[in-house]
Image 1 (cartoon, one colour):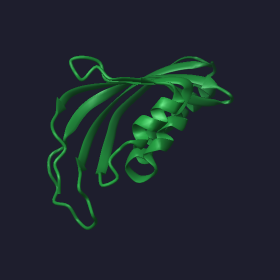
Image 2: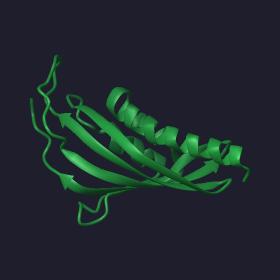
Image 3: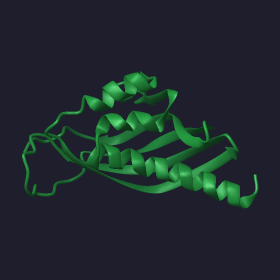
Image 4: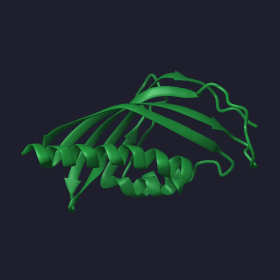
Length: 148
């Protein structure tokens, strides 16, 4: 790949990482599924809960099942995309999640993040655009979601 193609691929993958958290926090959570390939997957490996969700329809149901009264904001950093070819890339990015359940509006006192971890992503260029083929969540710091 020439340097401009590589840079465009890196930027497209970075944008997917950010679009993911924007849809969860500020948009419609079920729409996160559209950022994945048809056979895309989301996984929490052990020692987490060992959860795996596969396929766009299952991802739409999973993310769409988020509690309606949940307020969250995720902060992304240290995004490192590695382009392997014109059709494949990987990334590692760090995140912290602030969230509460029972939100009815107004200002909520800030608390510590309920999760801090990183994502390992695989991307595939298909149909003229980059999509997530898989996302694995690694969660070394986590706790319960408080209620307002």
